[in-house]
Image 1 (tube, rainbow, N blue to C red):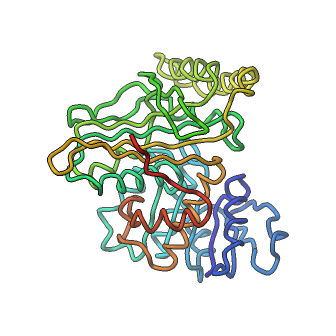
Image 2 (image 1 turned 135 degrees about the vertical axis):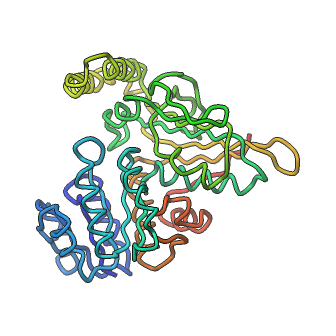
Length: 365
């Protein structure tokens, strides 16, 4: 199996390459893009660079003869263009394409191609990170234990001591408006609002979370059926960080602030990192995800809860690698562009993920 990796110079991309090289079925990794780090030193016999421009034509040329493409590109804002260009190249060539993109707007743009699934010769699965990838699969697993689903709550938290848990992730989740479902209707609410407490599996414990932008609401109602309520929430340990994030989101929504938003977020991000110092010793060092799916089973109200705790480096990359290997092997349940919960059978996916050391647990209430 020969695998293309886009975005290998990034920290996430380097981890994906190392993970792939541990898989005996992977005979080669091709690093696609104009600037590639010298990752060939990891295994010169199996790693090669394809220094092509990030255009549809350039990427399509690099995809020739490969079995699957994994994208670890930055997305959202200006970063959306390379992601959508790589996606178009995959559609053009028919190569299975799996992306770790987490940005709701970029994922929605890719999902917009589902109407042409019959003319798309391959399969593409956007969002295969821990959110919405793992979160969507956990919600589907929980919903399969119920007769009907009424509400879905998804919450995640990162730690300032966890490698890769940059504060910009929380700022992006808390910027602008978050799409929610209330009373069976989709609505927009200010991201970063409605703070509440959520208990995550130990050693994380209680964390403060607020409404967040998430791609889960784009497809989950189609999979589990109409729901009365649904939201995504996010948090980070450290009270100072949370206060600064909320200040940043207020700035991003201020009238006439469009041009000043990016510099303001940058300043607040740097301030937040400094502010985390006093609370760093109290941070758990772990990131966590929790889903609560409420509904009815055999006529009685019931809530199914799943949780997962690990380091963010594993939560971000392991789902992408597992999804890529399954896609290359033809183990995808859908055709064309498919969200994670439609592309993979949850039990099998989570079992393979557990073999790699990332384990989800069904929580007792």
